[in-house]
Length: 467
Ligand code: FAD
Ligand code: NAI
Image (cartoon, rainbow, N blue to C red; front, side, top):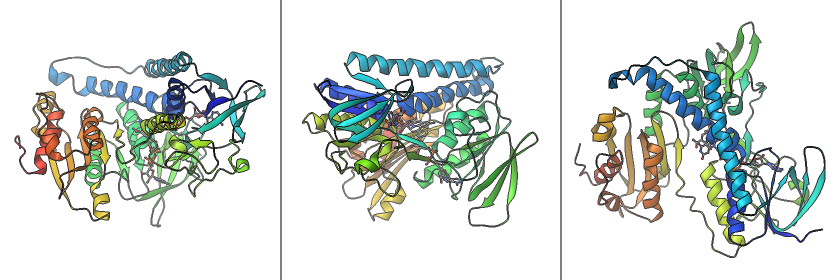
């Protein structure tokens, strides 16, 4: 048998492939195991990348139909869904091929098949054809990601009752789409199909959308999405779906109990969260401990209770986000190479790529209240920002939460065009422990949307200029 690798990574999503590349850069002999035909995991194949391609294309379609005319551009857009789906698939291919190139360039050995840990240091790989081989390595990193959470009574067939994966590839626009879950996937993919012509109803168990997000931001979003045409049924649960002539009959019930009612739909998207994926990994045989939510338990160095076995990304605790997985991948590679890799889990931005976009980093007001931290709020609306006014993208605001004693920025929440890009400066300043004053005194180019971030920082000390 060949010499053992320094590291074998199981799973080639954003966590796994970044970990493998960084380990190789640092001189570790590295292998990666992937059961899918292409690299890049959920994110590149059926997650971040294809959903953003459809969000982009459908936003332009809607803009062409409703927004261009006021700028003096006359067009009559017509949807070619087959081409739009091909546009998405081309984007996915470009990205997964890019990862294959990077792994090769960085001399990471790839094994195609399902990995199963036999014991610390030994991973058995079974190919789709059933051939087995054992890969030996001093360390193992589990980066097997997550899978769709299922709802009892709703069998996902990826055609009529779909998960996010099926909702990325509907062969025709469903006339009536019912979305279960007003979370990130429900709102992003619900928006895509609404823009393309579906009548969309979002059923949410809780009495608000986007649990976990700042309450004021979530309420503002609910109003904006309702105005766009998404119908919300909050405080409601789906209790069953039956196939009837010409569609699906969805039974609903108040979350607190009560009389049932029904909605007819042509398709149902189940988007009630994701669960860590560890099927077939052999974790119980090896004795790797998981918590009550089936997440692999790791210490501050990303090591499990079994020496030499590490885990990162969606399969461990924390937000299920690609950049969180990537940073953990990088950190564990550095730790294995003897460096001081670490991730600041207090500063992980999150974005919802709807129109307008939503982005946040750090604490929400509810979280600060819960721990009794005194804070000040600086808020600035895009209606008062010159660039937003001229572009007619005035929906939303920037909200900055700063420590009332020290002025240190504790949280930033943005609803508005390009919020996904604007949040980066908030993350940088928070990573450096910066204050609202630091941000307010930083010169921002004019005319840019980023001036709204500066104005919100000025507003913390009640000295915004343009309001
Ligand atoms: P994954 O990307 O899930 O990769 C795990 C890989 O491991 C998979 O390729 C799988 O095939 C492989 N694998 C599993 N078991 C084995 C085994 N035993 N042997 C070999 N291989 C195995 N996050 C964002 O930050 N931004 C977004 O815009 C965003 N959009 C999303 C949209 C959708 C529709 C979905 C579903 C998710 C989205 N996410 C987004 C979340 C993001 O995709 C995940 O957080 C991210 O992919 C997690 O990375 P990971 O490396 O932990 O796991
Ligand atoms: P989610 O956790 O964001 O939202 C699920 C929603 O479903 C919640 O509002 C929850 O209260 C509700 N819910 C749960 N059970 C329900 C039930 N029985 N009936 C009705 N509602 C119910 O999960 P989602 O949207 O599936 O996304 C999974 C994860 O994927 C996200 O948490 C996120 O980490 C990741 N993701 C990230 C994206 C981004 O960064 N832009 C985009 C898409 C996904």
